Figure 1 (cartoon, chains in turn red, orange):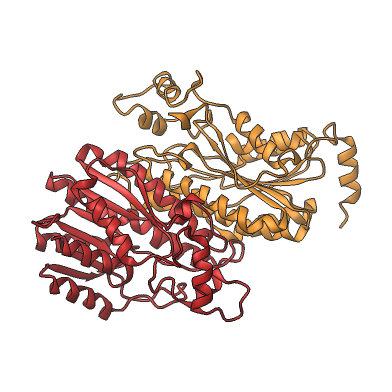
Figure 2 (tube, one colour):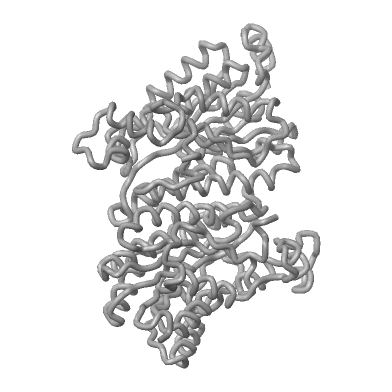
Length: 276
Length: 293
């Protein structure tokens, strides 16, 4: 029997990138999926966010594995939208066991030049959105009485700084604090709470001009190859970035019983960044 | 500017004219009382002039009285008793424009900016189920985004001065470890640690150092209140100061119930002074050993 047979996993930011990869991976392990994504643009984000067709693609890939999936367009900044989506989906699938608070955005500027809206949007999505996801979803896990797992997508930036992304680093550091606090609060319910801390992951969030410029500030029009070189220099292992499936492997491990006594941890998937 | 004569006479009249911060100007948020007032007095005693702001009013999700205009006026009196100059205005760290305005006035009057103490902060509590979205947002907006706004408003003045500078962010032991039932506070304070590290990287080329202080419980109005007593003594119906003191003492290694504001101010002074000229990106705990538990 697959490791997660009979379980239900909620994933935010599931339309593409890491979120889609987690959905497909957990479905392959037997879980039914609740997939949420804003499927709309946020103005301060300088690269295209997912569209409705992306979320439909995630659903198609999960169904192709024989899994059930409920999708919803919801903004993690809105408790009302999240609550409506999660309550309806849990009603349909019957339970909730696993939460992957994965939705996140990125933008870039020195702290003293960052527009206030960019700071606010990023803190709202990457930090407050994770708390709201937990606030809405965890009561369903508690109600099940079977324990469960929360996996927070932090970052190596939750542990170390990077210039020109003070809001991202602050939000991700905040998530490490949130993870440990919720691990304390939810342990009596048998709910484990852990973070994953990836280095650069090969998704649309990094394969764009803004990130290329952040990593290669001295080039006028940095190329993917220049970015790859700069990105690889941040890692110990000789790879420019990791794949979404690498992060999903860590998520599947933390979601499974093999990690039954692991809580409050931050698992790096970072090609050695944090060992530097 | 017409301040040169007054500035010179003030400096020469001051017994602290040769202090470790003589001639410097420090911006302090949350300066009406508590740690903020203590920082203002400690830095003034070493010769710094002060730009002091405080909200000076209540907040919807904060269950204890905050600083008042009278408190801020008292800070002004106490700094002036030390023969230092102070510009004090009510301002809200949630409102970037109010911070920019306060700094514009303060720097125009005092002539420069060297030191920033992003100290303003609040406390509330609640489990994941009980904590309201309003309380979460107010906390993040003040204790995290308010620290960034403070820096956002102040850094251009430091850079414009061309003399480097020192930024000290007030985090907490909760910026390095977790405590149940204050997820918003722990998240905000961890975020401040990340912000400190990032600013240290970004501002080093300008010789601006950025560090954070991480106190355990400090004996101020923010902890000597019913909200905090209940957080620390959840099983007691009406926890007393004595019960809180015992529970608070148990969070540290050294046999003290809490630390005093002056202990944090001494750390801030060290980080603000030339004694710490090559210290940047550091999280300095004033915690009686709490991080070892």
